[in-house]
Image (tube, rainbow, N blue to C red; front, side, top):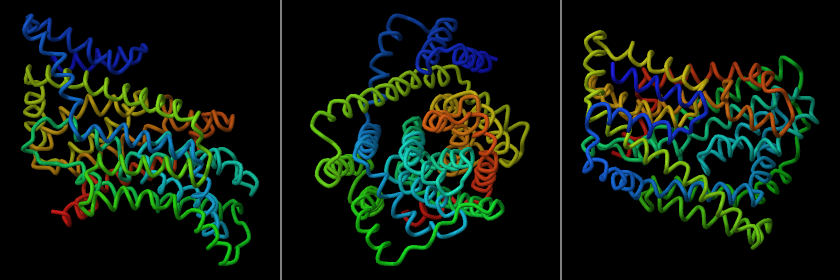
Length: 433
């Protein structure tokens, strides 16, 4: 009963416009007071606990990944990536749509942020697609959906947040394991997006441009090679054992800055304060949410709510299958009304013990949650990527959302596949074991 009241209170607070961090903090303190736990000594330890939650080395990668994404957007890296993808794929049915999807996949392997990927590629690709006869709602929906790959394809800020929420060190799930777990499902979603976009464009007889000669493709590749090295540095360094996630993010951020300043020459000295401030503001917002979520999690553990919830669910369902379907449906519904980080912070303390009760892989759970939460970026009324593309193009949000329905279906199917076909998310982590 306490858990139900806490969740409803948090949801109500979020719906009336209270921020995620303040919602969780206020409800947690209120519950703490109601249970008689709010003694002076206990309350004095809260600030230290909140600080400890965000002072770990793993979370230090988040500001660096955000900084890298800001340098990439300011440096014009997206333009060369899309140009190379267009040169290779433009002559196919749905070639420009495919080029946008592939560009988003590569950008996702750099920044890990859905909105940043959608905005970076959208500002370049939409105009090109419109010139070739694409309908604007479909173009926007394709890029909005492809931007959702950011939290799935490594490096993923969502995966880092998931790892930070696991307080039990005996679980033994590393950020690298989570990154590798999301790689194959992310690529599969991208490939299915390409198949659907090609089918749609062939059906409507749009989206083909003349093939260009090989020497011109090589020219585009030479322009893009420096940008394409960023995912090589990040993923190759981490999976090759050269860097931790934090070190890889720092090196990649420095590399992106050098590209923007010396190669593309679009980042000037006067731009640096704005870039650093944007990164600091985004980092502070995320860290504040994590710190208050730690108190929310602490209150849940003190009241034994997760254990009670697990016991109740296990007594009803003898296998994990129905539970995973319920989790996916819950996350899809919540994603329509809440931002993904908020959902993650609220549900991880419940879902992780539940997975452990059924001896279900935490890596597999993380992948399923990241895919399902990503769907929320293209489902109204809170779909962030829909708003990003609508603001860029002026297209009505509801028309973009309508054309995004097939992409929602694809991501939902892959989430179910990842939930029940463990090799999809556990094969690559198993190789690194």
